[in-house]
Length: 338
Image: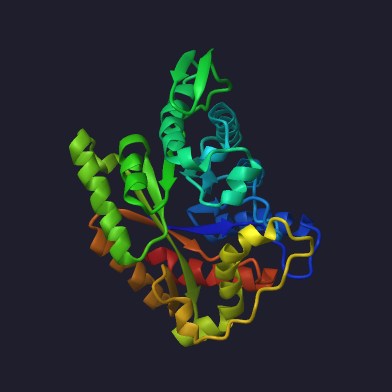
């Protein structure tokens, strides 16, 4: 089934002030992912972060579409309630056309109060908004006039054009039971970052909901993404990537505070705990390629369904050479075996 790569975020490194390098590197890494044989490449979204964590996934997806020719291009995820659904439908259709049908539209609810306030969206109605967006998009992509009257969106009768030349798969990211069950009812799959126990529970919710509504679960995609760090051992891998992994993890706790902070972006604090705490309780795996393969196959065995995998192994703190080396290790030692 192959292995995808991501999540590309175009973040500045400490001391940088110009994002040109980060966006040029984003395109280069997608091209490299295709060259190495990864099956998909994924972007990730947040807003107002001091290091510029990528806010415009579909804009970047259009650039990736033009730089590549075969690889699937996924959004992991667009924070759907922050967007007007018709604009989202238009932009996704445009990327689908530019990529000749290679777009996979992953959508998520979002969680940052700063983002909702800054973009004028109501966080309290985000679940209802997602429900309506998942109903609106397929109708919008037909190109035929339609009307929608909902609790969140009230749309006049109109038709959205252009239309994609093929169906755009829509995934739902998240971990809560309502989000997973919503995906089973209204989407084509889930994009989940969970421990094996939690992911198995999520699969169970999908299967239960499919049975309840009479859906064939074979029509549903289960995509699991996790940080994969190759090395001679877990200790070696964590020593090699410790600072970059910690910077990625820590930034989530700093996002809200950073929105009103002047540039340049701050340097992450030093990680001063045992390295194994970087992976404890997380969907993060460090070790030999064989150990990484076994961890992924264990997820598939427990889930009991065909699971696709994405390596969330883009670490913005790594320099170009180290990042490409990491990708090569995964492409050679892990991808052929999952």
